[in-house]
Image 1 (cartoon, helix red, strand yellow):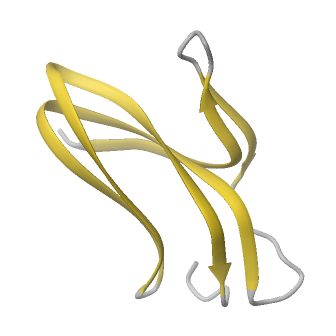
Image 2: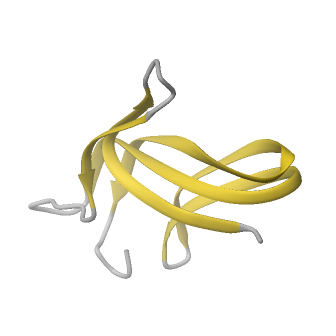
Length: 101
């Protein structure tokens, strides 16, 4: 059971002193008056559920065949089933067109 439960786009994400996920400026659309556009800073928060094992996880934000942003991280799961969150910071995301974004 390898599963992504959700991915959330927002202006800022972090973890507070109580280990709670903090999201600010959650959005589901990118808006601009003209193209090409540059999104200076955004975060993608992904919650996953994984069984025991070692993983190399890759998250990709793409537009048709073009990769707009990509990140890879390693995760070791010691328990039988573990859920966790990954905070991905994306800087200077360039959007050339709205085709299949």
